[in-house]
Image 1 (cartoon, rainbow, N blue to C red):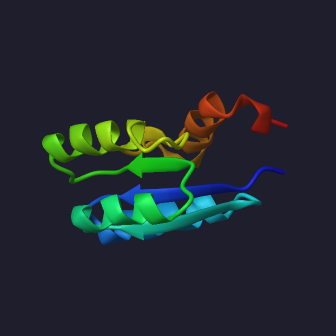
Image 2 (tube, rainbow, N blue to C red):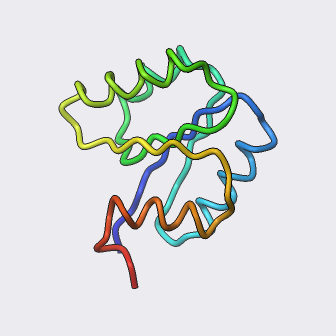
Length: 103
């Protein structure tokens, strides 16, 4: 099974905690959660990340900037705009990016 590393960015700590738990309930999926946008750029440069998950409370300009930044990293980092909908929706969003993960 492929290991997926997530960086989950948002402003609501309770939502970030829930997303981390949902992500890590899947075998081989790990999540780092972060509410400080400035931290994210350096983290992405220095760590392997497969998916940046954008949660609620972020400024529109940051969302645009982080997407451009991820594209320019010379890494295959996927970005998901995720604003709720439960674990089923999150899995479908991930599987649409990595269809080979589906059982």
